[in-house]
Image (cartoon, rainbow over all chains, first blue to last red; front, side, top):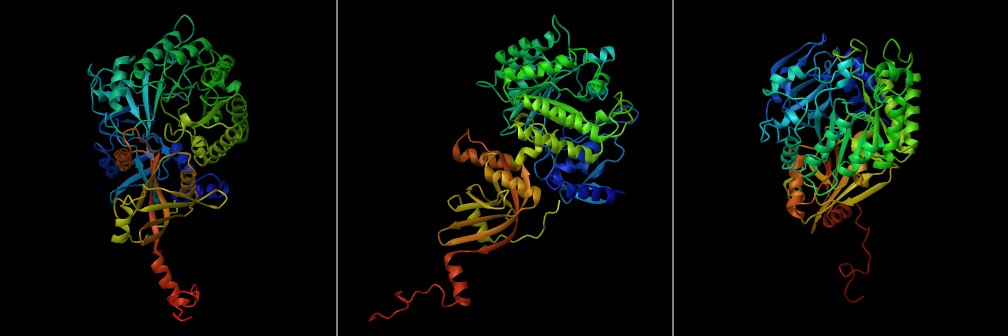
Length: 416
Length: 165
């Protein structure tokens, strides 16, 4: 079986010769996850590699705390970031072992390649003045600092959360791991101090990324959330002389809200994710977004954002594969592909970068128990999205392999 | 991912040359259409005496894009390193691209030590040498003359003709 699977990667590599095998491997890693052997896990329990506390999540949605740490995102030899999940619930994960001072990736018993992990940032282990662990405020990928500005999604309050989503279901388990209370909101001053500390490490970060659960409260939808982001971005901005490379992944704000965000802060890029393009499936999979503010308005606001942030600085993405989910999803990958490529063309024509990320079925989500998307489908999708964006002269600079790593279609831009 | 593990030994002389900032260092890569591209890169060095390493200043330089193509599609790279009468030609495989970590930071700090605190690098590449040839003018002439003694010897040269001609 394992040997067949590597051969499947080789077979698809031959079938799609202009898609590098590193990218095909990344896509498969994102689908299938990876598990570290005991030796490999031992080798990351040090200041070079250990990231957050290791929580084990099981197929039944349960979790347990451990006294060990997981490493950060996997790095392939070509510099590709693969934000691989190391959770227990993957049925057929890759395996990472540690031998002769190197991390080696295996598919079953077959050696695939040498890999590495994103180094542990030096600000980890530091506390803010108010005593908050900085790693609870911000995490890091290869060159991106990820700040979670609000640890609650109000779509869960009414059961309107996106059906693939399990954000914040691990918050309770995370609390004892950090040995400090994790509040929903984060004090902007703590974020300011964390960024200031991050910048002491030479060459570690080249973009700051903000995300959070959706908070639609306010006189107009999202007013409270926008106020929060402005306060946080202004606090972060005290570390810089002017505008700084940054992105927020956030709901679709009104033009007035976006204008304030752009004018009152140093923000450079905005990413309201559509998640699923097909109208019928959007209503089923993203019921909350279909209410706040609704699909049509979501799209309109995404396009409006180009007037403020400029062509190529507004992004949106789909969770590739979720459009195939049972029982209402597309019946064939060709239909799913047509839908996503149509969406990419629609947005690209209007200066918006449309990206894909790979759906990883999470047992705490409403779509638990479903199958991951086929590898060949996401290879075709990645190549198709890349080709369309290239034709429109778009370059995913804020979501490239250094800054994000979720998007294989953006990785393909490295040789352009 | 198909990289060739065959390596060539870097002698002490080449290591010394690679570590000399005043040496001439040129990297040769292949463009998408197969045509050659060369660029000077004085960051080329070796840290462990076995592999080669260099930093690229720009993500979108021709060299950097060609190196990405090199590791993705198994295209060779070559280097020319020279100082005075010494010169070497090194063929290599692109082994690894580093965008974070100890080596990345080391190369960045080296650049900043040379060019000031605002200097920057985009990424760092590691290479496995697969062949090394000495290509100094003296060695090349000696090799050629051993096999082709009458090439490149115009008869009007002082070392060939007699003084009374």
